[in-house]
Length: 220
Length: 252
Image: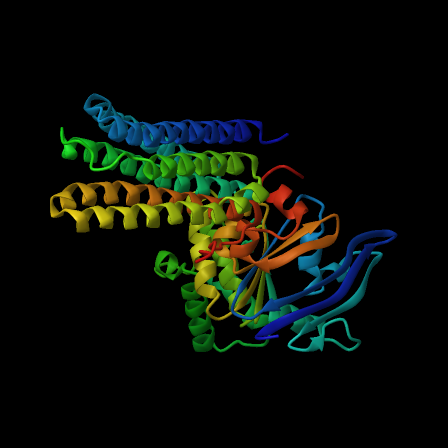
C-alpha cells in the first residue's frame, strides 16, 4: 500500500481516541460512585484526573491537525480526521460533566443524602455503556452499531424524568431538601447531556462512513 | 443545464487502433474552473486536447461523439479550426514564450488576426498583461527578451498571450508542474481572477491543486470519466470507490 505511514498514524490517533474515551468512561462511573458513597477523596481524585483528560485531548487534537497539514487527507481519510476532532471535543465535555458530578459530591459535603441513589447510577451505567459502543462503532466504521445506539438515549431521558419527579416530591415534602435536590438534579442533568453527546458521536460515525451529515431525531 | 459553455457528448478518441477515451459525457460551465485529474495515461490530457481539436494534428487520430461549444459541434464539417483555437486557447506545462520581446509575444496573436494599429496593440498588450498579473513587473521594459523572465513570469506571459486574442475558454495542461510552490499559488490566484471572465479547464496531477482552485472536478481512469462533480463534494465524499481509492492515495 502506498500510504502505510499515513494509515499507521491514523490508526494511532484512533487508538488514542479510545484511550481518551476509556478515561472519560472511568471518570463518569467513578464520579457517580463517589457521590453515592460520599467519598470526597475519590471526588477530588476525579477532579484532578480531568486535567489528564484535557492533556490527552489537546495532544490528540494537535497531532490530528499535524496529520491533516502534512498529509493532505482526502475523502474518507479527511472525514475520519474531522470526526476525531469532533469526538475529542465531545469527550472532553463529558469529562467536564464527570468533574461536575465530583464537585457536587464536595458541595453536598458531609450532609447525608436525602435519598439513596438508584436511578442516577443507572443513568451513569447506561451512558457509559452507550459511549463505549459508540467509540467501538467509530473505530470499526460500524454504521449499524452507531444507528442502534441513539434510540437508547430515550431510556436515559426517561430515567432523568424519573429522577426529576422524585426529587420534586422531596422538595415539596421539605423545603430543606431544596439545595441538595438541586445538586442531585444537576448531576442527573450532566448524565442526560452525556448521553446526548454520545448521540452526536453516532452522527459522526454515520458521517465518517457515508459522508452524510445528519441528526438522529429524538423519539419523544 | 445552466451556463453550459462546452457540452461533451459520448466522446471517444482513438490513436489508430488504440482507444484512449471511452464514451465521455460532461458539461463544462462558463466562468467556472473545471479540473481534470487522474493518473498518467488516463486520458485527461487527450480529453483536454479534444476541446480545441489539438489532436487533429496527430496522424491516425479519430474522434467519435460530439463536443458542443455554445451549442455548436466543433467537429462538424466546415468548422474554422483556427477560429476555434482562438476561442479556446491553451496554456502548456512548460512556459513556451517566443524568443522575442515581451510586447511581441503578447501582440503576436492580435497581429496574426490582422491587427496592426500601434495604439490598439499597445492597449491590448497592456490589458492582457494586466489580466495575467504581469503588467507591474514588466511595464518599464516591454522590449526586454521574454526568455529573460523568470519561469513564473514566463508562464503568466503565456497566459497573457492567450488572453490577448480574447478567447472564451482557456485550457491549461499542467500549467504549474514546472513552477515552484509560491509561483504555483500565484498562478492559482490568477486563475481565480480569470475565472470571472473565462471558462477554464485545467489538467493537473496535483490533487491538492485541483481541490484548491477548481469548482468542478472530473476523475479519469483508463480513458473513462469515473466521476464528475462539485469539487467540494468529490474531495470530501466521492460517490465512486475508485475515486475514493485514488484521491486517498490507495490506487493509481
